[in-house]
Amino acid sequence: MSGFVQWSLILLMMLTATTAKTATILRVADTQPANYPTVIALQHMAERVAEMSDGELTLKIYPARQLGEEKDTILATLFGAIDINRVSSAPLGTMVPELQLLGLPYLFENQEHFYRVIEGEIGEEILKFLEPHGMVGLSYLTAGARSFYSTRPIRTPADLKGMKVRVQNTDLYLDMVEHLGGNATPMSFGQVYESLITGVIDAAENNWPSYVSTRHLEAANYYSLDTHTMVPEVIVISRARWQRLNANEQQILKTAAKEATQLMRQLWEQRVKEAQVAAAKAGVTVIDDIDLTAFADAVAPLYQPFEQNPTYAALIKRIREAAND
Ligand code: GCU
Image 1 (cartoon, rainbow, N blue to C red):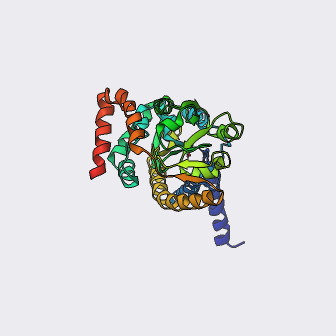
Image 2: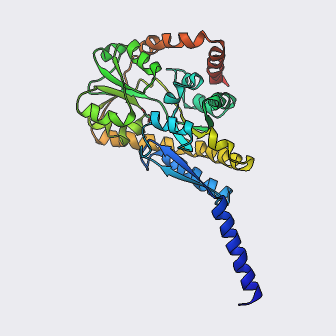
Image 3: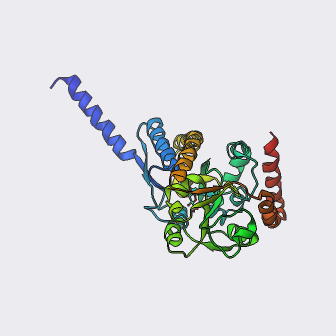
């Protein structure tokens, strides 16, 4: 063996050994199925992280609730058993009220207003509130607007009377449905399909892509365009893990998560259209003659407890003002 070849081999072995020693695998949880836009955005994030870190950071994604429902994966993230978590901001909001603010009904005027907030200073400031709770917020992803879907048409809040409506596990949405006159039933995302099929609930609420990907449309085939909330998705990392990463690795994760936000913008628009086509084919009736003022008026009191806190009130004001920027 020539000296050159020998040295090359030794170098290669050293390099492999170094990689083996320092490569860090980060476990990533997502409740949505593998082909859902949030998971595709995470896959892109994983590719970019691998590229930027020369393979030293690897994201291993567990979609489709493999690591549990969101309330469980959030706890696992706090304790560091899960490194990165893509979750709805609603269950995070039970611990961090500032995040819940973003999910207040009829807060955003349109999708552009929403993007301006989550991609701007206000969004970053709100993510910082996660840190004392054991998590570091990397970025947001859009989840569009959520609307009610049901076994019967919903046009006005009065139509919700007597309906059992699934909400995410937070008091805010329990109160929202109660204010609208329905019977709120908080439950995990994974339980909704069976509960609709068996008649345990009559209605639920979500965005178009979730409505279709979960097959909830099989049981609840009226989708009412009341667009009551725009609840963002958040990519968080366990603070325990974050503190063990160096500044360069932290930067790589932050950059890749922000790129995921941008990719999600395109994926989302496309996926909403596809979901609407799929729903139409499945015989879903879209209700668009909605009494939006009645909905907004009924849920307006939900702002009161937040408005009483000066920090939250200031944030709400700034979010609203961002509509005109
Ligand atoms: C959204 C979101 C999920 C969440 C679900 C829910 O679709 O993507 O993360 O779990 O709503 O309603 O619980």
